Image (cartoon, rainbow, N blue to C red; front, top):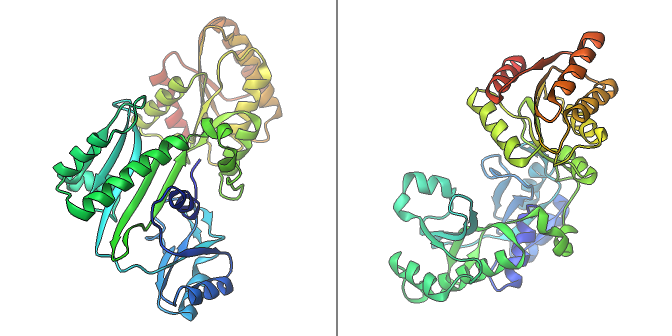
Length: 382
């Protein structure tokens, strides 16, 4: 779950990290009043859960309350990467002397949490790493022991921090790691971390919390907004389907997260674009489960073909086939299916689908390898 900038900033402030003065508004009139309260010079920032707001025109400066209102009239209601702007954060303009970057991530390659910081803030960390790799500093640490003071001190000294800047950076790094562990975050980020005459302030903030941990943080779960969540992902979550919308045209269904991700990778290698990630979970003893998964993928109008990749151990392929048939009988739109069944009763499952295809005219292609299936799916998707 990704929080809005203003929500993340409130949590950061609660843990002692400085933030600019500001308020959230939903109308141009509210924006004008807030700008008056803040002294006139403000920044109006679209509150949507996507990156690239600035480039899309969703972040604008205003030098008077009247100008702030005019800016808000343009931003409110605009669409940024398919997300309608329904509220804005109005903040005081900062006189920034320097911009730094600091963030916390779970490094999945090294399988360790890490704090990342840089003297070059205000741009994507990936861009900094690509253009100025020497400016990226990482502190890996043991999650059982937490982030130790000496680890932070050593990294900051190596990066050339000293004096008051060292003290403030040390404090923010420790607090950011504390926030990450308190809320079980996958990512926390301040970019840029603004150096002002008032000290270090989080000019922008990100906080992404592990969905699987939300039951331990009901106060965060309540912040989730239906309007900001992808409708297909929201519906899947409510139905208990493990689904992530990706925007391509090749639907993916697999029984296992690893198998689903590997299938998506091979589709990409073949030049295709996965429409989604969908892990059916184990078992599939009930055909209704497969039926619901396939019907859900077919709700995405961009899907032109669905690749179903099943490796059956406990799962029985005839139950999978039965679920596919139930879905096809109920589906309101038909697309080609590429099916790979391997394991328990695969011959029975394949025979059931072949018979159905012959009798009903369903467009079902059977493959014996993931590579063959991905190639065929990409070909059918055009």
